[in-house]
Length: 416
Image (cartoon, rainbow, N blue to C red; front, side, top):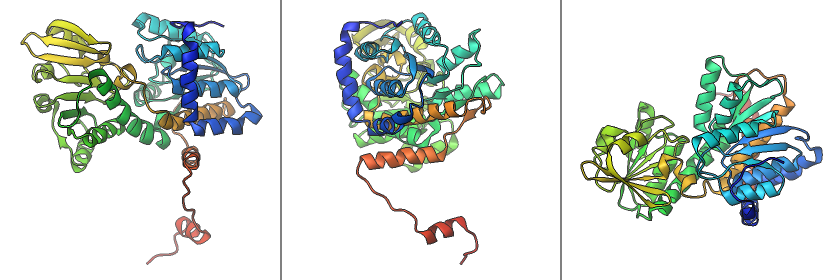
């Protein structure tokens, strides 16, 4: 078995973390028990490029127990939990990941993962999928792939639009049981967790500027407000901006918000959201964090070029003293703050996201050869199956339609 990790001796600590997460991921665990009878992934080769965390460890165990042959890498240079990587190698999975890799090593790990010649790719951010398409290898054995996050879906839809997508993709991110929970509740909690761990600041009373009011931005804004912050939203979409205003938040362009903010959190998936002119307007002591997938939302190069002194405050916080004397603080090099400075989303919310990954992978296998190379939405029946299973794990019962109600909702003859 080939692998590249930091330290195999960390395996026992990693296993404890995965075991903990597994207890809090009942939907995935119960799906595994239900599906194991038929071994739906037996002999299927899967290449994964997801954050190597304890929750991903539960997904990998599940795929392995259902018969898959796996090879895996991290999807962010700073998100790998090295003890989890060691545990997964010890349990028989080829892992190519460690925290703090260079950009060159990051892509070497992706290419190492690709050597399995996968039938299915599981991706987060689309780096693996794009690299698969860029390689000279034959993609005829690839049944399809899945994509975990908003940024990745945007990239893959662009590939589809340009006629460059060569195999079908299931847009896991766009499932309701993913983005309405993982993006909103998961990032809302874990992004602020990362910021607090990195700085130990008091959120209450701070002027918090959230860039973007999509699912992630909404979750962070709500959590920050709940902790007593004064929240301002910056947006380019008039509909999203209007929603933010009617939800009770201030709405300003970044050029105005930059002058009053204490803490800035980007969530847009776009580059250069906070850039040179904004840095020059910021108050002394302002803190910068990113919750988008790639480290392009905060213009780190512009921050460096406008600084006369750069100092590492702790493992995850860097002080930039601007040439005019003001000090700004960047968390986690501008990478995903919830995974760089904390442990990522809670296991309970990743339970639904990874249940979607599992069921989408099985659907691709069952549909091999019959799907066009397009980006596909998750079927509502899958969303409802996962939501119902989650409710059952929480001992929550809901109503069902009567026969008369079903007739009424599917008919048209009854009016006023």
